[in-house]
Image 1 (cartoon, rainbow, N blue to C red):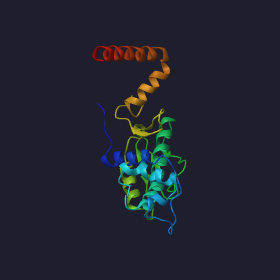
Image 2: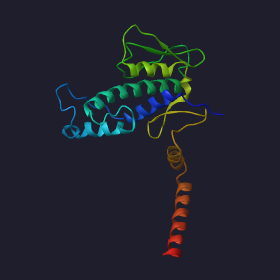
Image 3: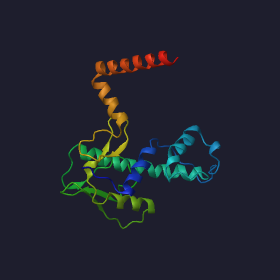
Image 4: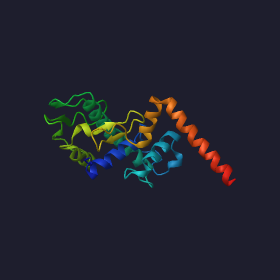
Length: 199
């Protein structure tokens, strides 16, 4: 039987997957309320967050600043996933690849393979405090990086190797190209027969 992540951790995974591009946030005197005046890369980045609470439709400049936060969350989750995959489950800190918060906090594996957040005496943004709370006592081996699309996902089952059925099928088709072509040919043949019958 599988296990689900907390609602907060699931939310942060969604945010992390929306933050696929790291772009420079606008300066304080830039056109913070007019998305059309931003360069295309910044507009596209803001739109990637549109399905998350980090998207502020009327304040695209703030959305881009939150994108930097989302990229930091993604960096932490990927570091956890990669460390767990590499077998770094001994007691000790997880090496962060790139996060603005590694100097403030550390996330460690416990002997049981769960995550422990080392407290900090420095103030953090409220969303980051929630993120750290969502990581506490989580089974690190369930936070994974999809080998096909690069998304972070929660492995409900221990044998779940991909974030979605689509990615699982892509991997299978790469490993079994002849069988995949046979299946696709069968679909095309049935589709053509159906169209001929009704056409």
